[in-house]
Image (cartoon, rainbow, N blue to C red):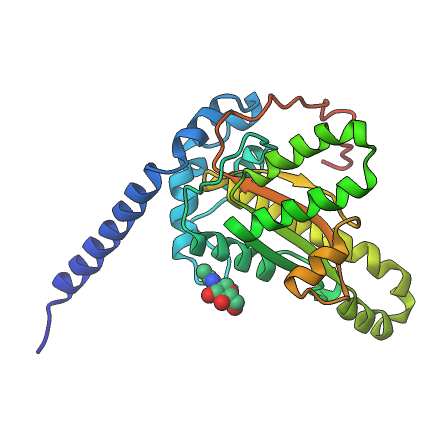
Length: 277
Ligand SMILES: *[C@@H]1O[C@H](CO)[C@@H](O)[C@H](O)[C@H]1NC(C)=O
């Protein structure tokens, strides 16, 4: 049976509109209120960025439509979308044990970040362990126990309260460098052998930025902690992490209950130099 082309196209159009509306409804109940509030506190430069393209709607909808392994540049995005996303990334310590987005969405963010964040020689040496709910709480129980052995008794109550605030969140992303991978590249590119550990660290940092920013865009608050290497051994034992993986940082996240603190900015003039423009 032949379907007229206009009917076929109309069906696709309505399906696309329906999909977008469903996504919008789902998201509008979650983290958008916070994002809108945060936008008001952004510095003037970022507030002046192209408003329609920097809206969280277009960001998430574009991300939804992109194929996970797509290598062709998206035409529906621009640098401003990306830059305003960068500007929304903040440290937030007032977090709860809930998430405005499903776990599958968090996993999607992790998967996309590990695929697309850069690494020297495309060595792909970063590893990620995602801990949610009970597993996240276990991590912070371990951290508290480890700290109890090294922090002076009179200072421990303060430390314990701090750890409890991380434990009260929804999840933690652990970022690792895999030294087994680095060793392969150190042998292959012997001239740069001593540079690879630094490049590995730089690569994990780029993954941290990607995951942190993406979580913030989806309405989750986050803060980055470094109780490594104190907790490395216990964590490796608990979750069967390879001895070759070195823990670099711990990104704590959850639904925020308060706005992050006001961010201050050093002048761009003293930090950027331009020649030939
Ligand atoms: C993320 O990747 C893991 C490992 O391949 C896979 O099991 C999981 O289904 C992926 N999740 C999403 C949401 O992409």
